[in-house]
Amino acid sequence: MELVAQKLRDTRSNIHERKVQFLDQHGFSALYRKGEWFYQRFHSHAELVEICSRHGWQIEEHLNDHAWGVRARKREQVLTREGYEEAIRYEFSLPVNAAGRTLDVLEVMLEAAAQVW
Image 1: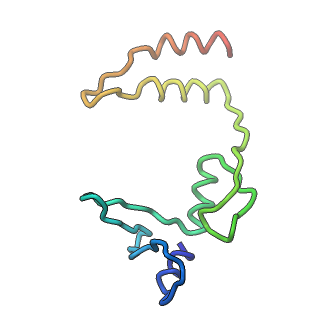
Image 2: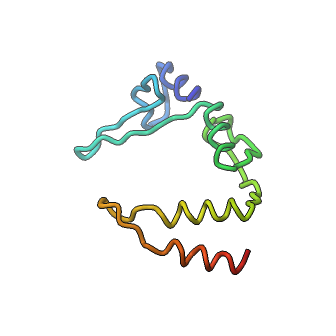
């Protein structure tokens, strides 16, 4: 987001590329194209670090000093039996349509998983 803010302050450019037209207080920009709005969210460096950490990614390198240009790797996650069961219960209880219907396979999936635990 810091780089975007700097580009918005620039008054001259010799490059023919689209720059962000505006950035609201939440880091969003919008472009109107083909009759529809296209929204883009720019993250600050601190936000990117927090997002990666929350989702189990370890940032190894920042590329070109851009907050969104990083090289990262997924941290190894070791789940307990209870953790695996919780994940299976969550995944196979999700609704598959607007009416709230599920696949109705939760018990079968728990039994199958129990054979490999």
